[in-house]
Amino acid sequence: MRRHPGPAAARRPPRPDRRARRTPPSSAPDGNGDLPATPSGRAGTAGAAGMAGTAAVRPGGTARGAPRDLLDHVAAWRPAATEAGTFRLVPVRLERDLPLISRWMNDPAVAAFWELAGPTSVTEAHLRPQLDGDGRSVPCLGVLDGTPMSYWEIYRADLDPLARHYPVRPHDTGLHLLIGGVADRGRGIGTTLLRAVADLVLDHRPSCARVVAEPDLRNTPSVSAFLSAGFRFAAEVDLPDKRAALMIRDRALRAVL
Image (cartoon, rainbow, N blue to C red):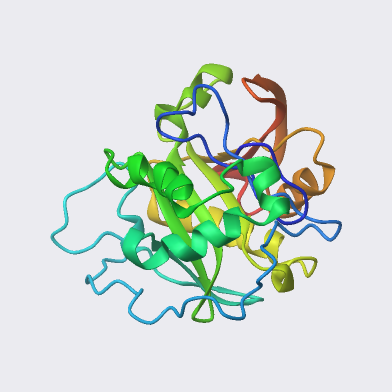
């Protein structure tokens, strides 16, 4: 993730065309370990109707008959039952989701780290390379109990410029996120969803042994949220735009942390 914004904005993940210069800002948790959200909160956000995928899914999460892709078909990953409600990742559709994501990016707490404030064209320029790329980064809405309330980027850290800054392993999978509504901050939701999404990665990506993130080292609440979500502090790394805390959730330690 990029610089972790404060309690409202998660660090932005490295963009396909800018990751070499900036690491994504992962949502930074607030004092209660919650990731950032936008001022609008959930009220008024687009509904989740029609977002759920319809592909038949095998136990491992891969759509029946679908070719294997770089992130094992995020669209087919099953919903997760969490303390906060039923959560699922829904891959972004530009025509449906751009206004909402752009609004979140214009929240000052988010913009300070993602640096995507401005007209919708700014956010579109960030999303389109991912949507038109080879699938190594999948932008998603996080939908909680039917309401879009967060933005996530699930990406192949081993294929990302981040891999030049730490001892990468094949299929390491990275997370970038932001919580889109003020009402969803400060209640422990950030930690809950971080754990849930890391579990989804490990459940649906059998080749992935580690989920990684790189919040700004100065963002203590964000680092704390990752620790509470089962990640361990692995190292300090110097990235092009920040000194980051390399956070890792290991499959082997999943039952312990």
